[in-house]
Length: 492
Image 1: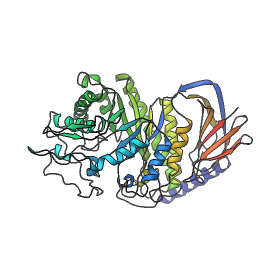
Image 2 (image 1 turned 180 degrees about the vertical axis):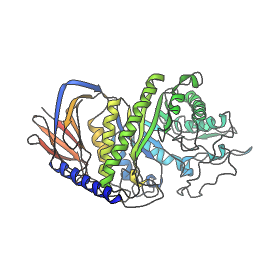
Image 3 (image 1 turned 135 degrees about the vertical axis):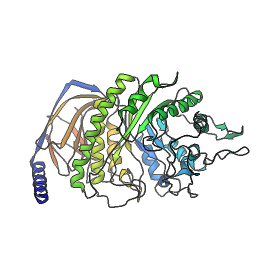
Image 4 (image 1 turned 135 degrees about the horizontal axis):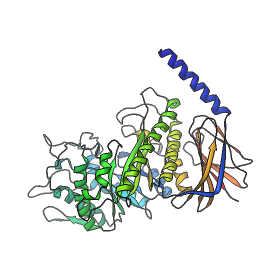
């Protein structure tokens, strides 16, 4: 029986390859039939880790790439595997001493703010001090700031159930970066000299995983933190949830219900994440191309359901999907990553970005700018060995530079036997454009409508770590290389 399944699978693969090689997808566009006005911005997240630090060999290139991207809603997350780079008060205050230390927090924050100057950021100091949680014994952390502490997030109950301790920590942290300093628990003033504008602050990260926080407790934590931070900056908007998975609709039902919040505290934005993953360890890129897009479709189905909850309970709340990517294996595992994988992951992000436009989602954040072995290398947008942006970065930049809020999607059909090509015509501020995505690892032919003066920009398996290739289109037939993401500009 197993041999029959293997044989059938092999036949299916041969068939799909033959279809892909001979099929031509025909694109039809009605520029006069408007579908939706986009509210969506393409952006990314930066996660604090040793490879983005000032002494990293790729630090300069990383922040150069971030600056040149010029994106809004850039999400910055110092997080728990590196406690000294994520937590400003690693020890509880005593009657005579406090332990505030921003030595390892300030430098990456400064680099981020410089690289994103003129653009909005979403700041998420996601890790709470471990001593604020009830644990059997004090939680240890590495003395080396670059040492990994995967077990730092311990405890499921806060030791101070009034939330004053928790809210006070974040209020002082927020003041350090926005008000030039703060007064600590003993009345001593600490001067920072920082007066950053923080338009968006996200409250915690993946509480469904980190400390396994139930929604009722999370909502109380959100209200306590936001209540204090609003006193410091009434203009800052706050984003809640930041869920790793869409498993429990109750999280959304409860959090988005205004009756479950303190008077004067209402959700302003929500966030959640999606990562496609191999279905089994032995999968190869031949299988990835189906698995990743199938899981993306499943995520989009769940997103539509969550959107129905949001619109019913809190239609004023905006949504950011601020971690979109692929995870091949756990960060502690290592293994080769195929060269074409980066293009496949980029094509999947482009597809999700397009679908988020159609669903009216405000932010599509690709994850993440820098990863490397032991730190989710498969989600990196930079080559951690040479500091070059990879295909995932160039896909994001291609989308960001060509499409944005205010664009108009028009009626578009793309008909081909394989179904591997996605096409969408969009009226932009710069003119008419067509987004094309090849979901398959074989070249795909696309027949475009008649037009003059067209150029095509493509990120594909040949461009690799280089900017998109640009060529002038002659005739109506174009070839998309494997996993290509392309933009056709119509100049007439």
